[in-house]
Every structure is written in structure tokens, then in C-alpha cells.
Length: 166
Image (cartoon, rainbow, N blue to C red):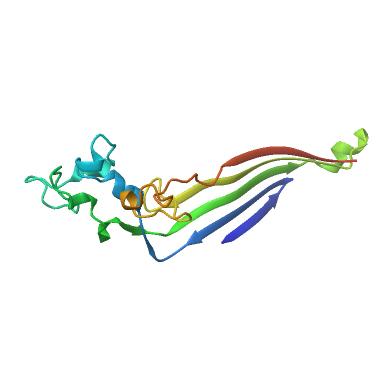
């Protein structure tokens, strides 16, 4: 990870980031949403990428044709569900202002700072909804085993505060 702190005219800003470069991961949830419309996929949602499925008019695609009778097709555990595990995450951002002491002394205050802080504010990944910081499993092939991507993402927290010194 990396971070920085900037201070100017009483304002301060600090940011902390984490990242990962290199590697691939199996996106089992994406696999689940790319089903062929039959079997266990009947009545379930599809990912928008299914609109690029193979047809006689759309032959230049990596998404197999939709055929509910095909038990392998788009639901098979194949390398097209491997996705880059690179990410950049904004873990913490704090913005504050420290009031000048000459404003505070007449009120008997020696220090006053107000701030707003945020945790887990953003993550940039190869696919929207994918968080490489968590195990994704192998989609429907691990359904019910707890490894199918049924998890809560990191909680986003925003706080504000006042630091008052007498």
C-alpha cells in the first residue's frame, strides 16, 4: 500500500491506499450469472455480458451460444472465468481543518480541529462487483458450500468529529 498527508493553510488531507498487481482469480459469481438458461439457471438473473452471446450474426465473441439443452456450454468451469486480480482500494481518506490559535485564545480554547473521515470508500477492479480481497469460489459448482461468493464486502464507514483542546 501507500499513503500521503498534505497540510496547507490549516487544512489537512490524508489518504491510504492498498493495491495488488499481477495474478488471476476465478470469478465464480460471474460464472453463475453467465448460465445458459437451463438446469439450475432456469429463472435466474444473467450478467449483461450474456447479450454478447454467440449467434450466427455475432460470431466474434467469447460468450458461448445460449442453449438450455447444453449442460456444459456457458456454465462450464473454463478459463474464460479467470479475471485479473489487480485492484486499487482507497482504504482511508481524512479531511480536516485546524482553526488558527489566535481565533481560539479569547474563548479559552487552545486547539480546535474538525474533520471528516471515510473508510473503504472505493475499489477499482477488472469487473464491477468483483472484490479480489475475498475468495469467490467456483460459482454454482460450490453452491451451498460457503465458498460461492456469499459474503459481505468491506463496510464503508463515514465519520465526522471535533477535537477540542482546553
